[in-house]
Length: 139
Image (tube, rainbow, N blue to C red):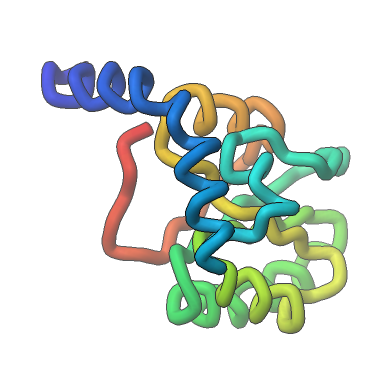
């Protein structure tokens, strides 16, 4: 691990305990879904289905929309495949809830803290990840 990544991980680890308060404040402004804050903290409430799971991530509305043809094609090609689609905005979550195929799951992407990211990955255990965006968070 590089020094810069180590410093980043240490800093986000120290700041991560502030995430619940910050997310609740964002929820009061309509920027988070209060009922789904555990997802943002890497604590999914849905069970992971058995079998192979592909995680597809698009940060907001544009990226989420660009994933839809791929999600639909993957669902059609392999009916046993579980498709987990994450996004980070309430607008994209609402849109994806209406447009995703029935057996695709939407979750909010966790905040970029070591514990939140680790909790998300430990729960979902994706076999493949596809990211559609121009920014990637190190954790």
